Image (cartoon, rainbow, N blue to C red; front, side, top):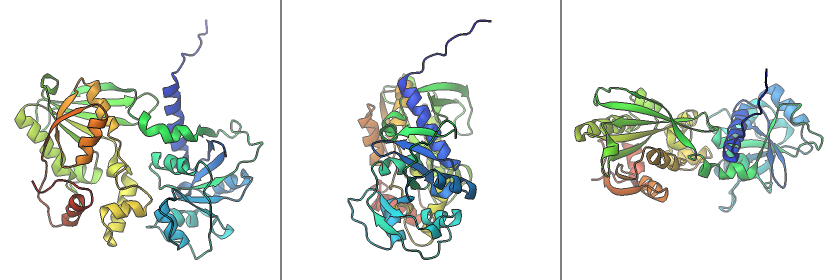
Length: 372
């Protein structure tokens, strides 16, 4: 039997693998070492279990800091935070060093911990990357950070390290290396001549789909819609949004036209994930609108990355489109990523009394063009 040397992996793929594993470890309640001028051992607040938390605290050489997004930090610290602050940092008091209290610090929809004084301090270097890594894991951007003991043996504990610079650079790498991994005809009720193409990037487990009607590649500028997956709207028929109508309406319109592509991106809830979208719904039921609910959870108003959709189109050989959208950000996003938007096709649907406020927020605060 002869042995062969492993095939070399390109640097981009290695980086993507490490970023995805680091984000996955945070989701599983496993510590991650963030490399930088000031190494930080991280643990996500919402996934910290009792045994994992005790082990994590034993690995630290400094008192733990709670790193929070500014809006959430202001609520927890009960004080305004300057608009220039990227991350709110506070020393974690021993009274809050338990899983239930940590989840309450991270999640405004969870039972809140008993009153305890948190002392705000300057955030360590790398704090922004720490929250960004939690977001990549679709977790609330709230983590613990400690300086690790100098003799910490990562390999012995099966822990991974990731460079802070790689985490911050991830949005620009996310769409790189996307390739077609599967394709099959899938006749649809409203478009019999259709197929679904699955895309995946090297080093990533995330799959994005293209729903292709007819032969859009034969058109100079085919109809294209960028559609972020919406479990509640697309599958369940939720009345809280207009996603289901937009998806089915786009497919029907493309079928009537003869061709088109729906890019079905794995970016649920404007990129915050399904669990966080449900949390946002809870906050909306308490009186917040879509934008403010996301911000109270620590997320931006829209966390999607349209570079992914642009690269899918380019991989399919489509470089010019007529975009089926009401969102000017999608036009700007595709254009910035090298896809020419020849024109915009309006794509609005009537409200249903349940989603009146949701649609109004899209128009007034997100700038969606719904009055055409």
